[in-house]
Image (cartoon, rainbow, N blue to C red; front, side):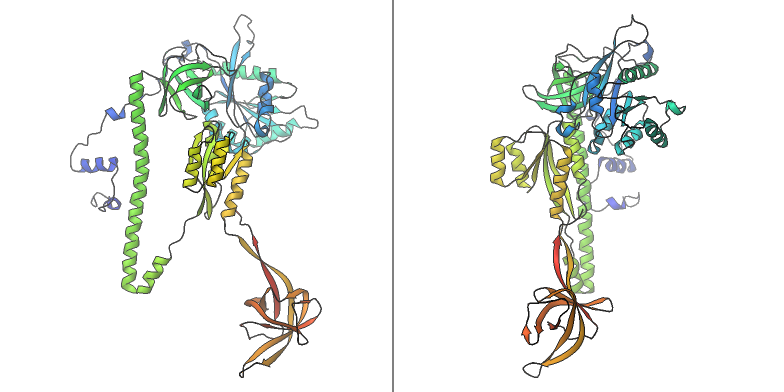
Length: 590
């Protein structure tokens, strides 16, 4: 092994991965056998050789933009319903999907076309959800508020669009507000590298108002024109390919997932595979909750009949029941192997550090025994952890909450997520949090009374909120509590030494007393003192005596003189400054 350059792996207690084991077998001119049955999986059907002969499919349009720029209100006006009012804290925290019928352009004989809209959250924490929205979409409508301009998430969307093949339409919203300047926003976009049609580029801008509905028909026309240019076609029958946009546990239906169909058709009774879970489709429902017979490309439907919750963002494929079972078994084994590999690396790393530590200790003992002891003592403690058990209403928001909370902290105190799940908080969540001395985070889900009582008796705190901002603030505050407090020294009084006296004590001992004048503040006997000479602190400690004309004083105020003696310090000089200070504990900062 050392000859072929595998020195790091050559120690007797190192566990080999299958790749390294195969390489070693090849070194000895042996043929490593890899289990082919274990490699079986279902894959995306190959693209059609001639897509132009296929039927047209509705475009998938994702609405993106910064938080509070009016994306949901715009969509509400488009489909003349109201979602924004019912949202927690007025911010979107899920992906919504629905179809809007569009009158055909030009030729009246053509049937009405539909556009599928995806509404994505604009909050910083939902970047994974936005990336998912961008990966399945054909056209991105970037909503920019005319009164707000370019914001961080606006830039993030532009980055996503730059790296993909999707069309872009810029909708400048809130133009009904008095005093807004559209050209300012257009120039800001140009500065970000967006080539707008106004300035001779190819990206259309449409001024709209989500509240009054101004410019919406023009926006829909622009999207239709872009879709016609993209010439979107897909098979309406055959093997299915789709993506899970969102998944949650619904009362009476069990685990459900919103599936966006990209190719093929989806019907009740089909067997689906998604990640490591499978389904036999029971009911298909559209965005209004009405059952549908079948779903075709460009439609987003809620599918019930899943064995377990599918993960948002995973690909959905169809196959026979036997093939799906075999593929899932292999996917599970592969996932298990990957997690074992991660564990294996950790074990190998641990063994290596233990070996190095042993060698260092032996070397230190050979030198001097004291150094060995020091080496043992200097084991640093790891960072303090706030352990969280997260429960949320849908898998996408659980992922977003986890990502947002995970990054809170520094190298002294940080957040560790123990487990995540979808659905209401249960007693097992409380027990799990109790086991790791953690906290339960409930995002947009209920905490039943009995569970609350259990948490109270087990002393497990529950953080419950429907708005992601509040959760982030609460968790940040809890992490700050774990940090060591910052101790600030506040000077409360200052005195200058004018003269020195030696006073004899019992048994031929003398002590030094400084005659001082108080320049500012108050000199109190209960506070700590420090001696400052030439700008340097040379001593800190308590006062031993504080007198004024032989009378013991508790405090001496500004402008008066006093005699004082510091315990354990006999080297005062004329001109020294004595500062009285108190130590104040401040909460740590992240």
